[in-house]
Amino acid sequence: MAQKTRIAVTPGDGIGPEVVAEAVHCLETLRKRHDLPMEWTRFPWPSHAWHEENGESMPADALDQLKSYDAILLGALGDPGPVDDPDRYLLPDSISLAPLLDMRKGFDQWVCERPARLLPGARQYLADERAKDIDMLVIRENSEGEYVSQGGRLRKGAPDEVATQMEVFTRRATDRIIRYGFEQARLRAAARAEEGRTRHFRTLDGKTCESQVCIVTKRNALRYWGDMYTEAFEEMAKQYPDVATHHELVDAACMKFVQAPWAFDVVVASNLQGDILTDLAAVLSGGMGVAPSCNLNPDENGMPSMFEPTHGSAPDIAGQGLADPTAMLFTTARMLEWLGRKDPAVAAAGRELFDAVAADLAENAGKSRGTQEIGAAVRERL
Ligand code: ATP
Ligand code: MG
Image (cartoon, rainbow, N blue to C red; front, side):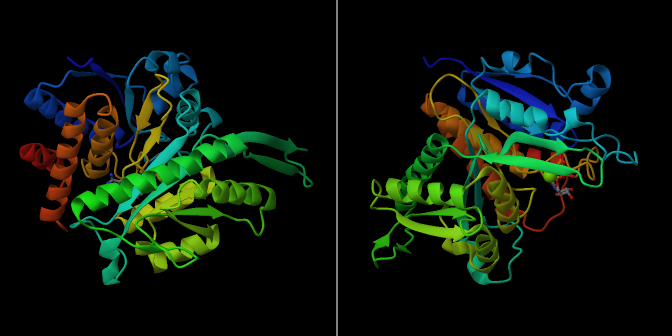
């Protein structure tokens, strides 16, 4: 019998607990139905309450508590407090996104995957009818780059103050994220072939490939990083002659995400540029309510990967039962698929959950439904 899969559930702040509750109900349904060897433990840690009590966003030993789990299912972190508090956006430093960054770093979750596919029933923001062909995977480098937190403020508060913010890019992290992008491109082409929906991408020398990797830089202005990234990409591409390659500057990429997003397959971007591009991609795929995300450590070294929707704590709608749990449920499906690398029954449950959420979306397009109503409708299908 397969080993028991253990999941740490951290609902977090704002709408986090509301959408996580629906995810856990679905996990329970799947576990019962398929007798899955799977268990989960809840870690409440709402960052606001924890901050008031301890001046921290999470317990000091949070990573130690989480590290033995196979995966972390996270709602959202970052609700600055009650909506009627005028100071709610004046966050103390320690209650920023620090715990998220600590987790990504502490568990070396160096891949952030954000698929953007306009599924039937999802809100279509672009009028062009080709929008229904939007199906891309944005892969964000998650371990370094603009998020290394190096720099400082010189002559703080003075009129001649200077702030510096360093970016650090290593060849090792660059190579591994680019390789990951090419591997995903191959996997996606294979999965499409299986579903009988082949796509074609032209290479510069006129060849046709069934998948594509586009890297995003700002090479014309940020030269050192841009050049290293481009060289690493071209070098790696030699090992993947079956995958078409493409290069965009980040400003042009933003334009093309709106103009012709259906032309992209896999997109590899830096930590900050990937963050920005994925909010844009989330909207292209139907909005924050449906956009899944995950932070992966693909190294098979026992450290847990973390699964959270693209959206945050959404304080504007928190506590009202209005949040769409679809993003969280797609995220949960991806978690099961990931955990299913070791147990095919768990992977099958992930596919079942994905199909149920997608079918629910297709059937209820445009209806206004509450969090629990959507959760119940999905469970009904399982
Ligand atoms: P945070 O600082 O935690 O990221 P935020 O204020 O940036 O919070 P987000 O959660 O990123 O808010 O949401 C941005 C917008 O999208 C908000 O207006 C929110 O209401 C909407 N939104 C986010 N998630 C959902 C959801 N699951 N269902 C419906 N609307 C959502
Ligand atoms: Mg946000």
